[in-house]
Length: 281
Image (cartoon, rainbow, N blue to C red; front, side, top):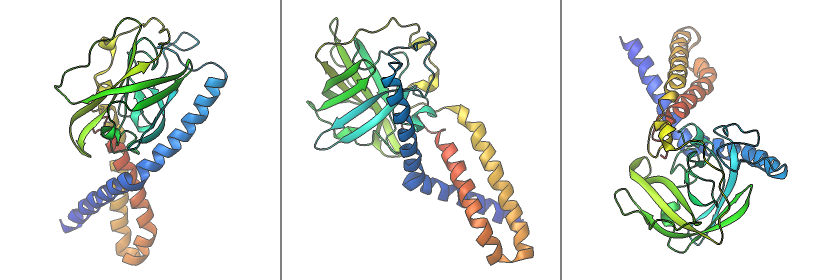
């Protein structure tokens, strides 16, 4: 009995250390690497004039989730942000960076465009949005060019929506988690109106009714459950083997070899489990 208690204790300790490592380092490294790769891909598509301008790409098929479609830039006294944003808003997609909700227009086009981003995990790109103030400027660059938006207000759940747009106007809505990191109190919405003329928007081929539930704000994605269980099983099996080997090799020899393996599997399990949390966390 004590032997199995030791195994369970080591598994839980490895996962906890994995969470700490993810929040403090691994998630930020994952975010930085993803942003570098996405920027290179976006730069190429902009140069070739193949960057998506709507729900369909240049070949007339739906833009795949995770495709880079633009750059979001905010430079104020309180917020400094430059992020490549991608198509899609599931928890898995938002590990790459901010995501554009697929049923809304692209930023800068006629209508309201919605971009969501994480508050704390995987680099927490939208963690400082609560510091924005009315009048702050937001710049978005897409395949149609650069668009400037002016913040008109921040709102929480249950607060009044902004005044509806007039014909031909554009708006940007940024959404992230609200409240204390890892203990969200809901979603935070930042509304910003387009300054200048809006670009034309291609005709949509689907509306929000066809979106998966996991694409909306503060929703979990159960598709990450199987990968999480897979990594957890590997971690459990590794610790069982380590406990068995320790009785034959000795404690110090075993842990010199086993520690990197346990930490790596714990971090992998924790990173996979992060996708089971609300997508804006």
